[in-house]
Image (tube, rainbow, N blue to C red; front, side, top):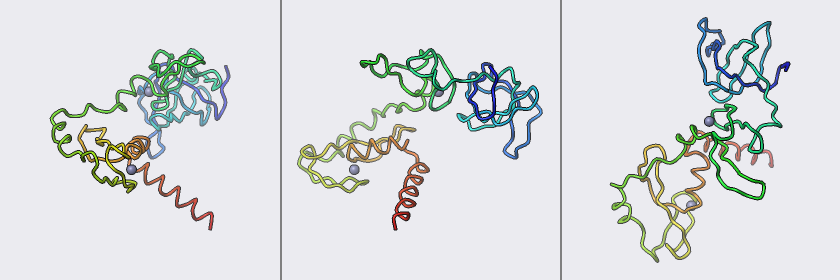
Length: 207
Ligand SMILES: [Zn+2]
Ligand SMILES: [Zn+2]
């Protein structure tokens, strides 16, 4: 099928030439991850320039390598799905089933391979005793270090031991809601700073 600028395509083999950060095209043919999805930036003769949004790289590939992705025909109910992290178009069995509901199987948005990187590192058993000792006791006053909400431990509060997902190290106790919040922001300071800036920008628009 013919492709045009702005289309989403996938590359079965993943071979091409990488554009450097200076915008210059490398002279050596290299490999990128097979089945990567990219957006067509430019079509020139027998070549197509793509922006692979998973690794955030620009590549030039042979036109025959770039196959169009029909965005209405990927997902759990089809044969293929695009991973929300690596952005490769993979068969649905590469995504684990999260739950089964009335519509059938619901698979995770990230492929099994990418999940390995996201899933929390096992908590260190060596720290378990210290954490148990440090944990506030039932009936204590607890103030969450993030949202500053006050609560009575195990009475009005669900407090959890927060861990660094990269190292598995215990960090501190906090309310369950803030712990989930940090996870939603991927424990990433840049993402949290962006969220703060976003809120500030929209505050100023209201003035
Ligand atoms: Zn993936
Ligand atoms: Zn909190």
